Length: 244
Image 1 (cartoon, rainbow, N blue to C red):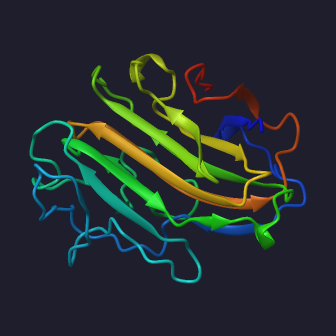
Image 2: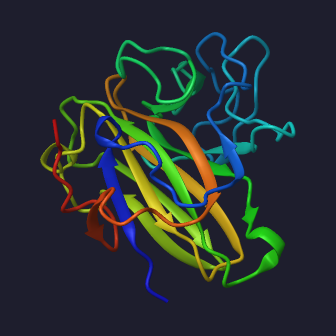
């Protein structure tokens, strides 16, 4: 089936963007622990699951009945130190880059993995398992404005009943030329026709100034009101233009 990707700057959104909406599941990372910078204790030469460390910002979170959970992994794509040198990843309340978060006072950050960091969120089911139920994913993301390199890469996508649907995929592109840096964006994916959906986010970079922030991830019933967002089409944000 055809799936529509819609994006707008958060500042340009209007109230009542959703018609007859109801929240199915969400996270804005308010319940996730924020502490010291994260230091991976695993072997940077081997792909592995990341685990939380006492006193450090969490990279994993177990659903608590309010917010959905997430799990993070590291992949050795650069034969470097990975996250073992300590990096500002995971739950965060740092607003020096983003100004403020779009919902609450915390968000989630991927940065400087010296390899690739991937975060996978809990799988969400359509209400009642009904394939014709109108529902969607809405989420906010912020790409730090910096000098991205040609081998830097980020991707945000969902796996919906085994089908991969890109929200953002910079593979083969120069992030600096995509017009997505320096402000919050909201992306929406129409999930109608799917029953089981998993959100994934990954960043491959090697600089502390190269960050991807997430906030306000919401699965809702209903579909976006026509005209509320600028339609970009399918397959990611390659044609996105930043609006001030």
